[in-house]
Image (cartoon, rainbow, N blue to C red):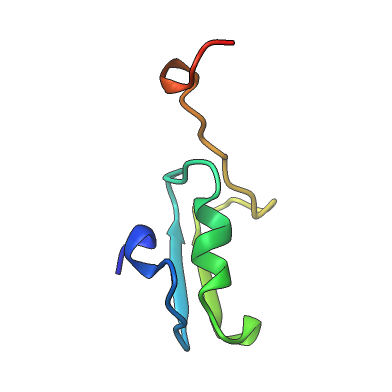
Length: 66
């Protein structure tokens, strides 16, 4: 299931593949908050990545200029 399709749903297990940065603003929160228990969340990070972080991607060129 895609993150966008998961909005508004509750699921018993969540698995995230973060081997490449794929998230735009807010998507990580949506993906993680769908799960009914934090014990049922599995996240796959790139091999050798020890800091367990991902990049929040914001495309500045599509935001309105102030």
